Amino acid sequence: MQKEELEQTLVLIKPDALKNSLTGYVLSQLSEVHSGLRFAGAKIVQVSRMLADQHYAEHRGKVFFPALLDYIMGLEHYPNDPWKRRVIAFVFQGPGAIAKIRAIAGPTNPHEAREKRPGCIRALGTIVLLKDAAGNVIGDRIDNLIHASATDTEAEREIKLWFKPSDIPPLMHAYPTEVNEDHYYFNDKSLSMTQESGSVCLLAPGDYVWKSDLDALRLIYKGQPSPCTIEMVAAKYLINEKRETV
Ligand code: CDP
Ligand code: MG
Image (cartoon, rainbow, N blue to C red; front, side, top):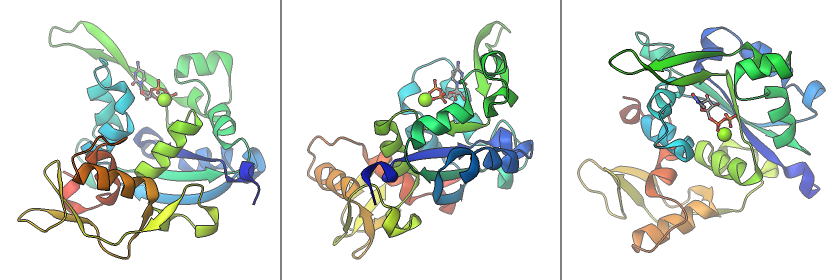
C-alpha cells in the first residue's frame, strides 16, 4: 500500500449525536462515496474520566474543561441513564483522511458552522452557556456531535489512545507494533511489573501492542522521562473495564 493510503484519523460520534439519533446521518456523511475513505476500526466506548482527560489533555485548565469531560463521558446527555453513556469511536483511513473529515465535520462552533458551511455535520450542533454559582456566564460548552483529529500528530496520539493494534486489521496498521514479553500492572496512577492488591493487569506476555506504548512503559518503569504518561497508556487498556466506568 502507498504511504498516503495509510493516512488515518480518529472520529468520535459524541453523546449528543447518539442522543439525537444522528449516528446514521453522521456515518452517511462520512461514507466512502462522500469521503473516499475506508473504515479501519470501530468500537463503542463508555468513556472513563481518565480517557476523557487524556483525550482532551490540551484543553486542561480552560474554563470549559470540566464541562467538556462531563459531555464526552455522556454525563450531560444521560444524567440518569448511565448505561446509555457512550461514544462510538472510528478510525478512517485513506489519502487526505484528516483534512477530508475535518472539512465534512465543519467548524468547531456550530453558529460559525451554520453561517460559513451550511450542510456540514457541526451545523447541527448547539452551544450551552456555562454559569458560576452566582449565575454569571463564565464560558460555553460546545456540543458539536463529532470529534475529528486535526493534524497528523494528533491523529496518531488519539488513535493510539482509543485503539489497540488488534482493534484494527493488521494490513491497515499505520504505526509500528511489537509483541510484549512482560507483565505490566496499573495501580492508582503507578506502574508495576508484579501483581499487588488492587492492581489491574494492563499487558501480559504475547499481547500485541503499539511499539510506542511499550517504549513508554519501559521508560516509566525505569523512572526515566517518557513522551507520554502512564494514564495515557493505561486508559486504552481499561476501555470498557467495569472498574473504570464509574
Ligand atoms: O473539536 P475541535 O478540534 O474542532 O475543537 P477544539 O478547540 O480542539 O475543542 C475541543 C472540543 O472542546 C470542541 O469540539 C468542543 O466540543 C469543546 N469546546 C467547548 O466545549 N467550549 C469551547 N469554548 C471550546 C471547545
Ligand atoms: Mg481539537
